[in-house]
Amino acid sequence: MSKDESSSKTPHPRQPGLNKYNIAIVEDDLITRQVLSDHFATSERLQCVLIVDTIEKFLRFHRDFFNLHLVLLDIRLYDKSGIDGIPSIRAREPEAEIVMFTAVDDYDAVFRAVCNGATGYLLKDLPPHELENRIIETLDSGGALLSPSVAKRIVRYFNPGIQTGNPETKLTHQESTVVRLLTDGFTYEAIAGQMGISINGVRYHVKNVYRKLHVKSRAELMRKGYFSE
Image 1 (cartoon, helix red, strand yellow):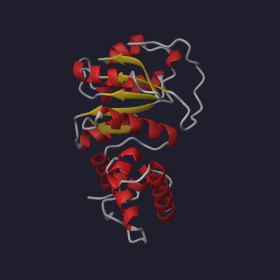
Image 2 (image 1 turned 180 degrees about the vertical axis):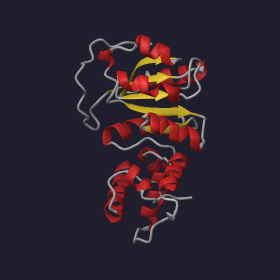
Image 3 (image 1 turned 180 degrees about the horizontal axis):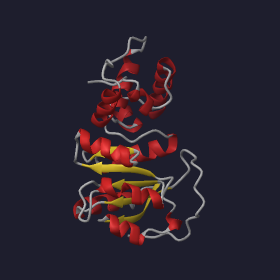
Image 4 (image 1 turned 135 degrees about the horizontal axis):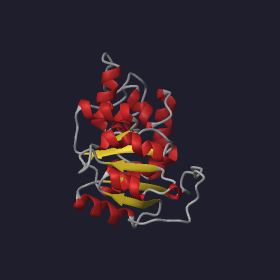
């Protein structure tokens, strides 16, 4: 656990590509904590200022000057459910993103978490570098951190009659591929690798996709049902 007392109490303005974001991890699995701690220690954009294994320890060691941008929160903790602990964390960090990071993938857990104030829900099948990229991309541009399967469940719950798959729009083959990879949770870097193009090329296709589909973010793309099966 590390503390950076030089952090300001004033919320950091978010400037894509410039900010270093403060995050906390509440995770009871020792190996997962160590893997994430080691990875984020090398990050140029994410600073892990608090790592604990229970809600009680988060509340005990939390300090206002941490000025957290995001909390990664497991569900199955030693002292209580992470979902039940969301309100306590929210009371300490009202502006932070609270993202469930768990192996639990069911309707009840997802909707209880959202109803309690979670702003994201990721499954633990993301390798650390993908997790880091997703966090940075979301904090830079806004939107919700959701695993594809979770996003689909939410969309289907609120829009039970929605049709999935590519919309009937004049997307090019490459643009359709970008939609599929975006909604499957790939980062821009991973999409570039999959398609054999540069990251700037990915940005170009994403810009065209958003313009054609009248959306402004990955989250909106998925919310409107533009995802692959």
